Amino acid sequence: MDINNLIDEILKQSIYLGCFSFDELLHYSAVHSPNGVGISKDGAQTFLLAMSGGEPAGAILVDEKGTLFGDKAVYLLQGTEQFHLYQVAPQIVDTLVSRCRVYNKSHLKNSARFDIPTIGGGTKQRVGVLCLTIRKQQVPLAGVHVSIRKGKRVLSTEVTDRDGRVCFRLLNGRYVSVVTDRTGELTRFAIDFYEPQAESVVDIGGKRDEDR
Image (cartoon, rainbow, N blue to C red; front, side, top):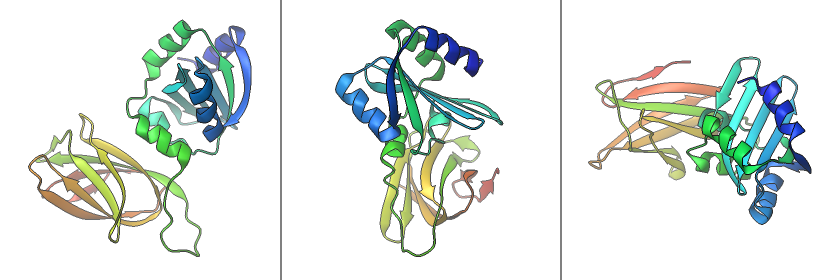
C-alpha cells in the first residue's frame, strides 16, 4: 500500500472537516460520529487514523524506516500530532480499516490522554514504547497479565496477545514488571528503559533477552 497514493485518492473523494489536535480529534469524533480519516504529516513521517462512526478503528504510520499498520502504528503515536480530518464514505473507511485495524484501542486512547505519571521531579524525561514478549520454556504465553510498577505504584497493566506480546508507553526510567499467569503465579523482574523504543523477550524462570 502506497500511503501517498492512498491519501491522494481519499482527498479526491472527501470533505475537509478541519484541523485538530489528537485530543480534539477524539472529542469531535465522539460528538459528531464521522466516518473519515485524520492525516498528520511531520517531515518524513505520515500518520493516518481511520475513524469509523466516530471510533478510531485503523492506523497507519509511514516514515523513513517503513510502514506500520494497526496496533504497531498506534504504539508510536506521540499524542502531540495535528490531524487534518476528512469525511469519507463509510465503505472506503471500512476497506481501509480492514488493512490496518486497531485491535487494542486502549493503547490509542491512553496515547491521546497522555496519562503517563511523572515519578519524582527535576530531570526532564522522554516518553518511549516498551514491548515485552512473555514466554515459558520458549512458548509464548497468551492471556497473561503484565503490570509495570514504580515503587509501590502500579502504572499500567495489560494482557498479552496470542504471541505473548504486550506494549507500554512509559517515561524512561527503571521499573519493575510483574507477570501473573493463569494459575496466579507471580514473576517479577527489573527493567531499565532508556530508549525511544525497545523490545525484550522474557522467559519466565529464565533471563530477559534484549532484542534491540
